[in-house]
Image 1 (cartoon, rainbow, N blue to C red):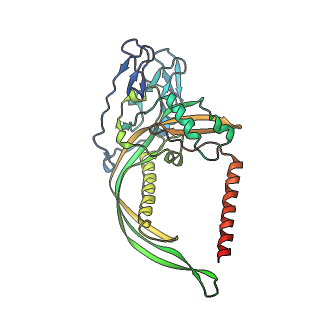
Image 2 (image 1 turned 135 degrees about the vertical axis):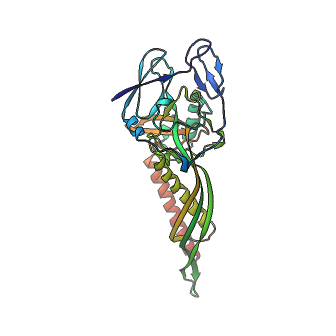
Image 3 (image 1 turned 90 degrees about the vertical axis):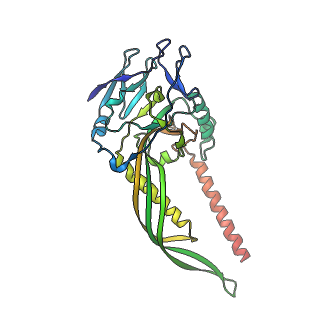
Length: 353
């Protein structure tokens, strides 16, 4: 099913050409006459209280299944949006097209971290970041592909919470001994632990994009959340923007799991042990808040040895994430090196013993 939606466009007040957001200028910029137009950078006053949220509808999934057709106001072309996209550049005249915010299903974005650097600088940072990656094939490392790199705003829900956890568990510690004959042996002692632990979390980010998963997203973190500003359509002019795929409730469950993982790390950091034999925990969440953010990334699509890859880069920090080819030869040599090192250490300690 195809659906026509309204199109918003930023026109240059001087020449009428399309304007795009310029990270270097922090303004809308016209490449035709070099005019600029200010965008208000407004702070977000408060976050949404979880208990006061409006019930989400099923419109998101229905909206994603539709083929959406935007009419370019500049050249008249019909531009198709894929799945959850609602912003795109016209492939015929380059105009920045944004779907009407009033037609977005359910929740509209609260805030955005604008892109910090341009496409040209993104290419430079991407190549530099890729060359730092381990196990890249030599040919690929010399010339990472950059032909299809473009800015994409990734949708993300952010969650705050105050937590109180009750825990118990068993920790094991190994002890090495030497008998009178010089032989070594190992005994294990166990510590039973229990207690309570209080924590407070702010801006736990959960991606909700169809283009990457949470593991890939976390490889791009951290984002400097102090740079979040109130959402304005001017910030997304010239970039692809995707609407969220998963519901607020689904993402909240992911955020709680991320919080619980951190709580467990905090608890165990107070003990000395070699292994966790058993651990259980119950956590109560209170003072819960949420926000819907758009976060800047650069997305690079390419093919290497007949296999397709997509690598993302943080559009604020330049950190390159996962999703790139690896050399089986380099991985094998790396594993062999560590095996030989381990066997060498075992042999050395045996001789010394």
